[in-house]
Length: 295
Length: 158
Image 1 (tube, chains in turn yellow, green):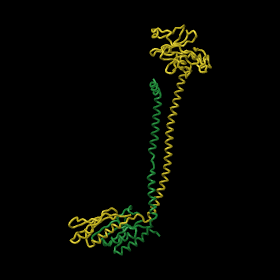
Image 2: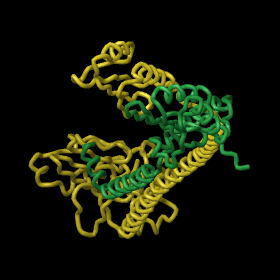
Image 3: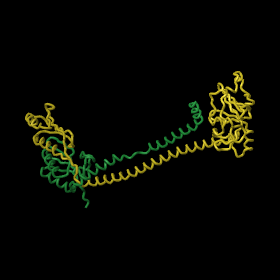
């Protein structure tokens, strides 16, 4: 059998449950504490006195403990907890359309019921009786606290949150810096490897340049162009020729010949393979080819 | 109910969440912008260049050494004289109608062959057959031809 203001043993711990209220605060003297989604109210003076009287026991609220134990059913209109065997003294919890009110039962009468409940003509026979066996109860997560303790705890929580935020921010920045440093080191390693490769490139280039100064390499053979030039100048050695051309590969060569009555046949005979002869005017023909040098 | 509680909790921690988002974005931006500034060296291109040069070195190493330029010049004059072709030197590379990039090896002396067109062509053929010589520009005017050349060899300073 549980009751307020007596020493109990819940979950192996010595506790005292003081009287608390669910719903509206009866007066400004009451202090609020949350238990789950519900608010409970209690008198701070009662809490202090109970602590002083029971320095080795933890102090919780009666309804607070019942809520934490999961015995309260928010769908029931009236729930009662008897604190004596004759079941004429105890506490009740009335819930209707969002209105919650807890109060005392004295001489089997519900004290201080809200006016809306009075019109319904409730009787204790309609109530759900809550289990008052202390062995089935569970302790709430937090003991009841004075206003000062609540503020202190709130400040401590705020400070802890701030510290956690600062730590998280520092951690993110540190991770970023670590990542940046890691990438920098990786880049530095790559740069060192590349520097070695560039040195090798320079050495290779120098070696190539040195060899190019000494070795007979890549000199184009202009034999084909020179042979064509020889053939043209040999066939037309008595004719008036004019030309200005490059002997570099893929350049077009144009040799102009002044036409006479006798050289037409010789000019046309030169046309073979990639040599072309064209009579561009009555006075002039042009012999054309494209240089193909070999390396 | 759960959504309401979640929203309440989110609202409670909104400034913290915002701070963390801003810090994360700022940190990411710092890391990424630094990374973007780092230039990745082009290993592939450089290795390809080295490989190409090494192949050229290999090919070049087995080639004959170039003769000395004064001996080349002497031989050019010797061959040209057989064809009654005159050899004269050209001081500037551009007057010989060559550019630095045209010279594949050695050091170059520039000159020109002058004579009858047929003889110049014949001499040019024989000279290139015997010596490291490359021809540049030819000018034919009636029966006469001038042909510029670059003789490539080594200079002996001794």
